[in-house]
Length: 261
Image (cartoon, rainbow, N blue to C red; front, side, top):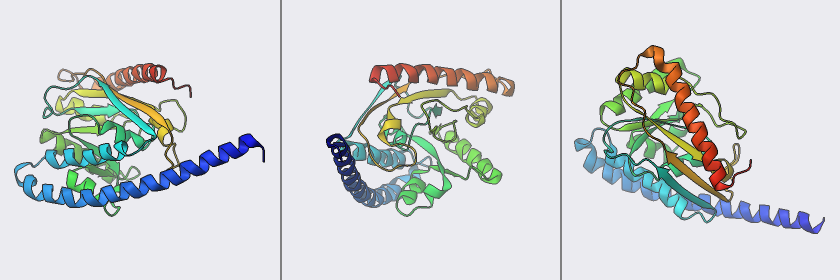
């Protein structure tokens, strides 16, 4: 084996060991948070039907996980909304599982639309259900309809909801087409759409892998787009306008972060 191949193998082995240790630490954090969130749930939910407080504490678990990870440098920028209890339909591009860890750094609560399989997991699923996140089985029309009703419910309780309208992570650096659902609900309820551009997380955790990689990532919050005077006929235009804005901001972020691929 050549010397450079040995270096590559050693780095890969070291990163694998570090990833295993980090997942073990994350497991401990999750266990602690189950107890913590259960206590917060009992004392706050009777007075907080939107589970805003429980959700905020749940997102702090993600922030804690990033804080212990020496490979990740995550940050946020852009518009900081003034009233965290004004509900927004938040949409963001999707690069990897690490998006959740990054976006959780924003200082207001948003309920997440998540695959039902994740919410069935012990511990993590319990946390997500206590926080009021919304399960969906993407291949099931009935489940998708129930998820849309769940989104409407959270928004009616003055809590924002975040949706990744690509539907899945792109296997390349190209963004996928956006789906209509989030934009239809925003127009239906006359609520503003809050776009977020994400860059850098694709390198933090590649699709199909749970190994942590060194990465600097940023989530940039863009100006909200009001929908009060729009109709269903405006949904395609709104969807493409928001996608174009996120694409442009993402490309700018990638340039600022020095991401080449």
